[in-house]
Image (cartoon, rainbow over all chains, first blue to last red; front, side):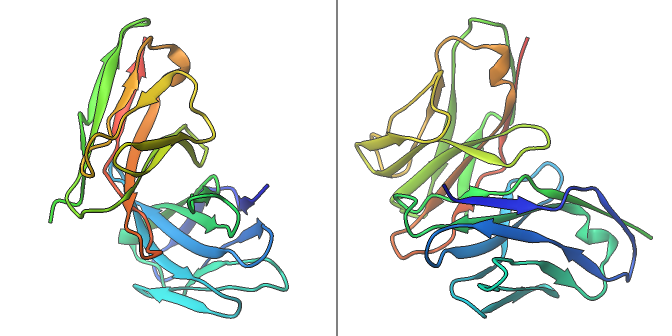
Length: 114
Length: 112
């Protein structure tokens, strides 16, 4: 079945450092890919998405490119801030998941220090 | 806009008790979902609904029940609480136009 694999955290960075959180997926066909962010005590919020190969999703300085050849959707940000500290989830919506349910990775916690 | 509202935010139950987690959305979304999030894990789908009167099982439905009598409300029922159901529960909704899911803030449930 469809699955998402994320790098384990926590990822600990200093403010203004470069961020990469790896995400790879297994799915048939061409799934849609998402990054969600969860701030402490809150629900998940959509950060960005990409619906076809080579699409680049971007929002709030974060970017991710849908790479079909490597089945990856890595999240990047050039300069992180303390306020980016959160848990980040990669997810896919497959073509054959029935009623378009999301399949989530296990999440990666990001800790940014001043 | 309120979006997706979940109540309560926190609850402690004793083993064998029952309770209902409430979820309501004001966006007129047809699709609604219940997930549980265990420590260090991703979200697992419990139940989902594609519209009023229609529900179906997700990956981990055992020990839970749902109903969907209106478009707005999608309550999740635990009949006999067990320690394995200690988790954070998230409700989400989505409209018909292939848009992303909107999540509530979650209900943290502990069963002792």
